[in-house]
Image (cartoon, rainbow, N blue to C red; front, side):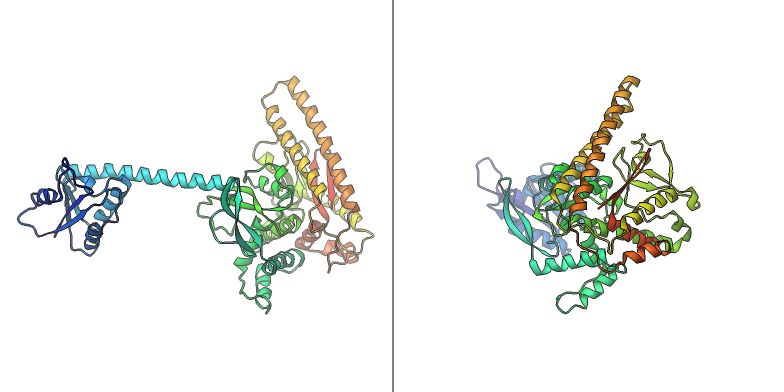
Length: 506
């Protein structure tokens, strides 16, 4: 059956009447084809929610109508996007479309070509709208406005005004946020804790009214929404090539972090390096509830256990691992120092990500990981001598330490700019740049010394369950995982420079 459709918004002397539109449509019928008339009077072409037009679409979907005839295209719609969607529906149900006055007939080659042109413009309009929505999403994120999605576990959504506009932020729900703190504490501070182990213990707790899975626990632990974002968190994500929307000065150790972006199909809970390189980070409006040291400890532990999974499948990979993974840092480019591959432990060297990425050329001394471990081991055991327990950093971020770390990060950024400038400079200029780098490097060392002085004076909370006498007597028998656990509790970082190693303790 043929559907003849007519529409008129208002009666005008110079406009064709509904009756005339229908008669024109009937003139295009072939061999007395059966037809049904649909009329909408008093409706604009901008509005697709017209009673008879809705009935027409319903009849098309039910298989009653196989061809639609109108007097002009704009009787269907005046909006090209809407028209494009309608044509998609017609195409989906194999319905021909005929416009009397414009000789638009999709049963002919010219008509099909015209349809394709219309569809191209409709697609362009759709993509333009999508891009506008995407740009608005990133702009909102960069300015710390609330983004869409589920409210993170442990928080509740509240309305607020930010930069003169209405938005939402979050505040901790006391009892539930305590569960989140428990999750981080259990995973970070218990040697044998795993995601499954933590999830099972929480589910078995009658005081916690919810079931937990290891996947859900992993999402919580990897999400920077909960962390009190300070300079350590800034440097962590800088090393992961995340696009940082704030300067390091904004990382005061109080607010949580929004991490968002196009992960190209990578599961959100994975937060892999490939996915993070596509993400943006913004200091949010809500307060964080997990100190950065605990949060980073969890990231290292999860990363190490992920590496251990591959070790189980290929034991030769075990020789490439070190208990210093995640603690070593290059002083020249500020990026993390990493371990190169090798057939045996004697051929494994330490380099830096900057060198791998061809942006750091200042390193001239090659270090084998075995030598680095021996030197750090000696200093670590000396540091632990005389102590009865290993101490961790305070739960509360020390503002003065964070400020010093911010200043160190800025120095690292200045050094990186100078290194980049050095590549295109003349010999006399290189000498001047090298002097500036040495001066900045000395400033860094002074600030590291200040941090050491402050941390030495701080009262720290002991980590239960580790006997220092056992560590000193049985260190060589410990597994890589246990050595790393102890090292992370005591060592802030290991600076690997040409002239030697510097171990900075908490």
